[in-house]
Length: 161
Image (cartoon, rainbow, N blue to C red; front, side, top):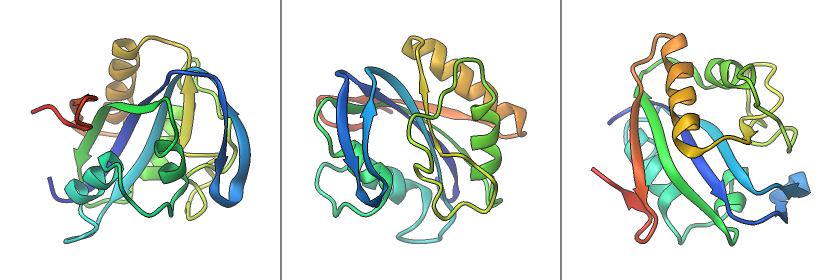
């Protein structure tokens, strides 16, 4: 892993209101969310380091996703990524936003530095985990990326190899 685009599959175990930085407080429904991001740097901002930061339980809350992942009852359950040096985060978010069942519950989430016209980079789905993973892998393929998926060991919040 060096550079690329990724999707975090996140499970919210409980309907709850959460404060997301300067965006404000929003209702997060129980279910699954997909967050789209990218990491195109060479060292500290490379893909592996970015994913490990998302999995870390101790980090400074900076990005919208940090506030969500820091909340109780929220867990990353899988990561799907593809190696690329192209800026495809907004393109992937656009494809995912068109998927059946995709909903934006928090307008602007993860899209404050967005170069496209994305409504958000966080999407809510009311389907089961394995179906969602397959759906997101298909979205990667639609933009000519070869998706790699990794499930997360939630007991240790680490990638299962």
